[in-house]
Image (cartoon, rainbow, N blue to C red; front, side, top):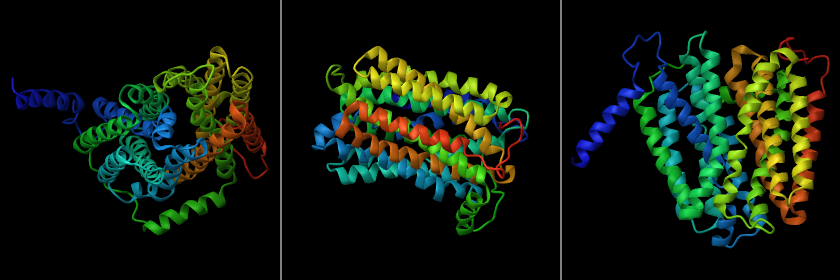
Length: 420
């Protein structure tokens, strides 16, 4: 069998699998194959924001960078993603999403190839910023899938996509660490380009075309997000609460590889990436929070989750030179972070159902700005004060998050099922 015959056979099989329900009625455009493809694409795309973390020591050694300079690399990706939430997410209301996703896929491939080929910190930061911009694919796929689902299946559809997002975030470090150790840090970005190309082609082939519901001019779309932030005190509160706990989360993951690269661990990139497997405990936190939030309220669930994160940082800080201490601490931190995220998003989506896309964009913008801040300051804290400095910085961020979550005034009222 020659290559053409092999490719044709496997291509037909793949098309048949993904498009299993493509010929069904337009009343059910989200088949199981499409949902699987979209969830997988969300996972693969979200991973791009975290691929660089386990390989930071290798990048620093190859390019001759200090720890402080290394902090700008993960921060650039987070800032790019935050900028996309503000500038690109609203476009999904006015441009057919399949076309927009295709454009972002091309940008992701190009920026990953650039990161693969750079020889300076400046160009790597530019490339990582562009990777963050193009990772907005996730924020196009999630509302797209929701719009394709029926009212009865919407919850399950969103849950499936969020599981894909969580797996992508957590396993990205394990995959990156393995590839980086075996083939070098540049191979991680080439892998990213290949995956982006594959999923970009599949999404363009199998996603349906949609007619945008809104004809609001782009400048007004962007400006309306500021109006929503000003109008809703609950949105401001949720954004601040999430931003500060996500800062602590990113401070941990931006410095963990640097910490375990030193004595007494002396782990390589592959070994450091295995901590991502431990962090899969976050999926449990997301599921538990989703089932309890309607009973105990978002604010109470977030208080419990933030307290759990603080406890995790105390353990990982005090026992930072012990593998068992790090494992227990990371499990508690990830349980808390993903539990808090689900609870906070339930609160966010209850604010104004007519503007959920833009409200979610505002919330996630604050979330990833906090993540960029945490990545950058976390590495600086590690450089100056070591692992203990990262833990102290993170606990301070969590204290502010706790205060923001409980700074409720009388004008911020929530439905009894989404707040306490």
